[in-house]
Image 1 (cartoon, helix red, strand yellow):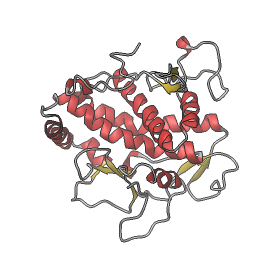
Image 2 (tube, helix red, strand yellow):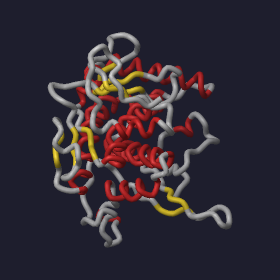
Image 3 (cartoon, rainbow, N blue to C red):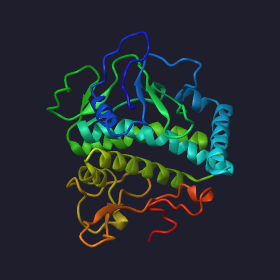
Length: 298
């Protein structure tokens, strides 16, 4: 189940952005987010600091991904595909650590890389289990003026929703930039493609979560403001947040939602999007293309 609890002997207060994780727990039982004083050196836990510093550890994680892929699909994925599957397993829940509180509570956790740890789920498949680790002070977060939590230790008040969106983009990019650099030799993709993958993780993770929470329309509007169309593709309108078009680098592409034509009479049009990147799932299951796959969507 989704959790944000202290599982260690020491007690720590629940972070003021943990309510979003608790809400998601009711509808998605496969994501685990813990608040811990430390993680044991055994039991599969790996700090992100260790992950970035140890090439042999990264190679072992990708090899384990390939073994699980062989067991699941009946054929071993290519090494670069296995690395991409591992990245998805890590980046999907990592993005939700930041986007869920942003959408549901208008708060953005400000976690540096060294305050995160992860491990593979017990069944070997599904999103990685994550632990939020303490730093030298309270877990920091950004919020808006007037937020009841604005006076709490660790709160950093930003000017307006546009500033909070910028904080979210900057925080997620700071988390994933060193990871993409470390894993790039295994992924065998260039920076633009890798940031396209991150764009898709950021958008589609929250879109999926919000759909389960009954907040799809709200998420589509928020994500469109977070990652609007680049100026060269813009139609002249402002973004969904009412601001001028903005530079969202290093993210590649945009949320770019559109309404899909109903497949049956009487069914309302639903939002859809074409992914910026290809996850390469077709290389292990050619007949099972992902919804929104850029290989098949115009």
